[in-house]
Length: 361
Ligand SMILES: [Mg+2]
Image 1 (cartoon, rainbow, N blue to C red):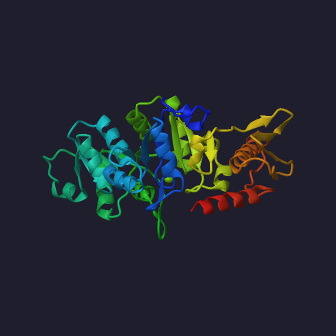
Image 2: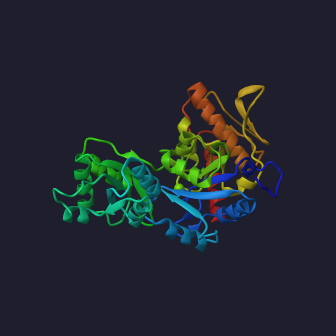
Image 3: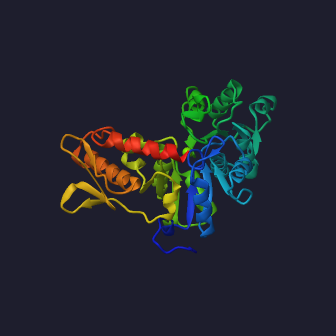
């Protein structure tokens, strides 16, 4: 790897990054604080980046235009969507030129075309119905604001007739400016009510989207870092794909989610924001004199027999967060204690994190 620095920064362990978008690079139209500068700096040191999103509704070119508007290299940036991972999966399992029912936004049919498949809409499926017509080989189902009952019904008929069913992702909700809306998982669930099989899911936390991203990067698994703001998709998926991951606060998941994360949803690296990519990463270690005490740089954290978290005043916020998380995870895993994010110093730490993230904005 070409690197301008030799300080043992976190990013020096990696040649490539698979970066989530929503909650990591942008929230709605706004850039997430420090994300753009950090990525520009990382890119200039020779690390390559692909952006991997479960959101299948927008075409990669639209996402690239959004990135460019935020100040990131736009046209050259490689955006990998779950629609592309889904289309790739269909292409690997169906003949070239197969008719595939496309359910979702324009990103879904575009991805199918790029893989040499023949996307058809629900209306086309109905209009083209005839005994001589080749049956629909597969259904690729992703989110789209205009998905209607007709699309879901045609998907169900095709699956019942034996078509391969691939879902881009099964996120149950979709965060919007007006609140949570039903996500693709909810619409996939509606089709599932009518059929006897489960879909193949390619988006995070399943591995095909990460596998496609790594193959686009051309880096080795060991030297590729996944970055995400959701533990149950980004981080769980990275663990399943064998990638190390950085979890950043400030997106969908916060302190209490991190504390309660299942073992397969826990990242190797935790930071308040992306600036940590270019800092030396201090890993929390168990205190040699007290196995319940975790040390991260200047910070110390431990969980008392009553289950209360204690965190030293010393150390940076990131050091205290890392020590505290390890102490709580260890208390839960090894001592069987309930992991209370708000017990002892947990509440104050969470407030401090909120304040740090709020002052970023
Ligand atoms: Mg996200």
